[in-house]
Length: 217
Ligand code: ATP
Image 1 (cartoon, protein in one colour):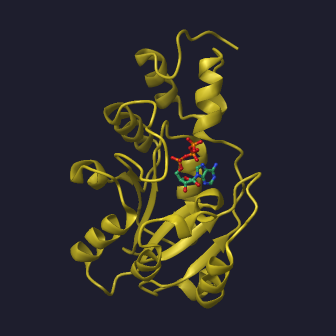
Image 2 (image 1 turned 90 degrees about the vertical axis):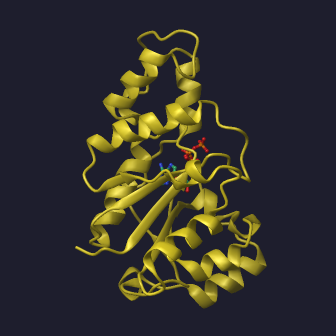
């Protein structure tokens, strides 16, 4: 098991089994001690989350209880302001040094717009990027991104031990789960039990999140 740093950023509004199982899978293929889920406080490229940061964090902490090796890292919340990934990666580099490998995990939907992220080329130098395919999300990169990918692309095997600068596309079992669909289902009074960890589903119910009422589907 390796102590490289792997982080999976997101809004987690709410965290679901697509996030958790993908993180577990990457942890296993890269033989990592842990994967950090890093919730954003305020994402620069998304609308304001529907539930409060306290609820999102509480659901993540509950979910992590049943997923060994998944750790919640609240540095973006503690930092305050807009949650720029480049700042987060710089804070990891300051903490762990230049030699350790850092992997930033993201779904294809996020990677398709990666060249809109603040200082995206710096992000690409600070870490390796692991892109997960998602159902219904084919790749659609700008020509600028295509050129950058051509120079950075490598396989999972080639990635091992490299501190940063590489991009790797990973074919996992694709899970057709998204927070948007979960929020919509809850709003319609449905129970998305197969998409959420039980502890998170119970938390949503107890706190009445994303809905008016909560009835059996
Ligand atoms: P929303 O539907 O609100 O956009 P989401 O389900 O995409 O939410 P986020 O918290 O926005 O969840 O996503 C955080 C990261 O997790 C992103 O990089 C996203 O691409 C990735 N991700 C989310 N769901 C999956 C999934 N089912 N499989 C692989 N990656 C996923």
